Amino acid sequence: MVPFKEAFLFWLKLGFISFGGPAGQIAIMHQYLVEKKKWISEHVFLHALNYCMLLPGPEAQQLAAYSGWLMHGTLGGVIAGLLFILPSVFILTGLSIIYVTYGNTPIITGIFYGIKPAVVAIVFLAVWKIGERALKRRIDLFLAVASLLALLIFKVPYTIVMLSAIIIGVVYVSIFKPGTSSGANDPTQKDEEENSYLINRNSSDSTRNFKWSSFAVKAVLFIVLWSIPFSLFYFFTSDFKFWKDLSLFFTQAALFTFGGAYSVLTYVAQYAVEKLHWLSQSEMIDGLALGETTPGPLMMVLPFTGFMGAYHHFGGSIWAACLGLLLSTYFTFFPSFVFILLGAPIVEKTQDNQSVKLALSFVTAAVVGVIANLGIFTAKAVLFPSGVSFASLNWPALIWIIVSFIALKRFGVNMILWIGVSAVVGLVFCICLNT
Image (tube, rainbow, N blue to C red; front, top):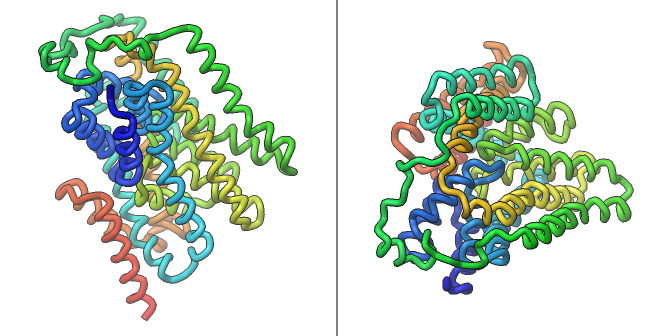
């Protein structure tokens, strides 16, 4: 049995040190849970990771919840998932308050002047990395380009693009009918080595078995928990429509975040900025910069959007903005707990279903185009703040985007370190410009 106190302290620590995006966060979990503590075997860890990568939502946070569930059941899953995001919630709340209070001061302006181009480079680096892994076939490249054009040129809603990719994947699988399992993914560890882990593929823990009664109880409980905020705002606020729209918006965003935070930001930018007018393009990029500099999942950018939406809607009220951030956090991450705590027992019964993986590989291909669209969206706002024209091109920002991309891609500079460097460079540049 994994010691509960020791696991609790690890999840708490992870919430404060989980910089570097999902890749870094997953690496930390693997190093501690598999290599150092030998709590979870390599096979079980990778099996959980494979399915978390297929789910909508932040895969690293879902993997934490899944691992917590493996070790201590439902309570362990809830604690691991919550501690993964709570530190970033408190940090982001403080930074957001500072942002709206002092955002127009020369120091803050200078810092963000340097960070924004670096963020653009980070997004395009994500396109490069995911594209290298995902675009293996001609049809993958076609889907990526088609998704980009659909969003960029034809303004097709993000949800339609993602649903179309899923449908294409399902049709493809139904035509070619791949095998349901593959020997290539069979465990290579000997039973003696596998059994040296507390939780391994030979474990027979009754808490990990699927039961319809448990599934039904959890499903009803989740429906009640999702509904409670609506009831509270209906009876105790005078602006129920805004809070209802905010809650439904972030629930919808969470349900279609295939590909992680970079992909869903396209949807958020398209809807929250251009249709709801909760915040400007510049503020959205500032939120992305804040998300990159805090621990926890990058999807904390979504709660920042809720913060700014409530802040503007209620005439600059900090209290309303903080409530908007907390409510956005709740509805952004709540579906992840539902997916894991309801689906994990089912997932444990599956073994490398190739049909499902192939169908969802089409989603991954489409995500490349979605993230590329986000890169263009952010680059446009940073490079052409006064409208797209050669005369208004922000040359220092363009140079720093190129320098940042080379530093991150060619020399492998730590992302958090580079954001700090960019902040200093931006501040120094603005001071020199104004003297």
